[in-house]
Image (cartoon, rainbow, N blue to C red; front, side):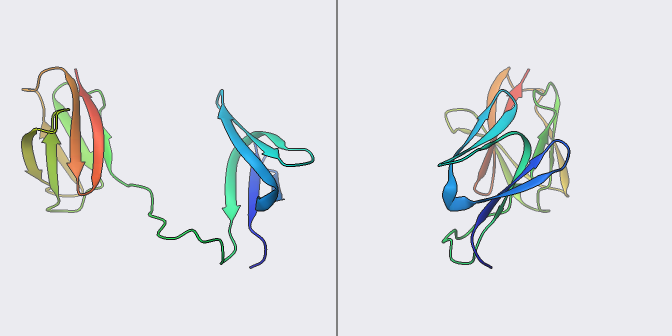
Length: 136
């Protein structure tokens, strides 16, 4: 495939490719991204970055981004958990790790009644993933 590249996309859709070994750092601040190069001009005003990696980069076991969504957050009465496999176990925990409730996912979307919980921060454990939510 050749050399690994960092590809920046500006607001107008213009793509610029940089050799990945020449990139010094990528800075995220004030809702913007800046790519600083080891030498030469960097890139500012970036809306998106992509990586084109050669086969020998050595990045292994990249996991896809989680598809589990918990909403509304903060919640008052009913928490919806979407993107969970049917029959997956959902554990509701307090911050000390105490199991408060264990729910079996009914479908791709499961409702959890949290109206009896005191206001505060809680955790949902779904497999190896832990998601925080706030009860109002």
